[in-house]
Image (cartoon, rainbow, N blue to C red; front, side, top):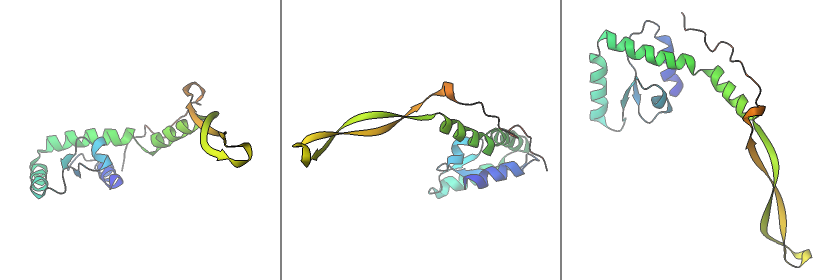
Length: 139
């Protein structure tokens, strides 16, 4: 449902309409100009729909411009870029941990276990270009 909300915003290049969105969706945290409702509160949903239907055209346009701006900037290119940067920043280093497992062959001496720890090294991250990230919406 998060993508459906963002697709609605992307498709409204005339800046008309309003988005009623459950406050429990991830998109509600991003699309703060939507009309948030609690889907389990029937009266609250009715109030949200009433508000939405009574919004003046200027208010609809203001809200839609804000949401379209957010959707245009936080797109799949930015998401993929962040994922690649995070992956490029991960290295492994050995860590020695004492184990409670006993080895019968060494008269109950505790064994050392080598684990991998994740270290983020931002200085080693390669530069990334998000191709098309600034491309405006058009029909």
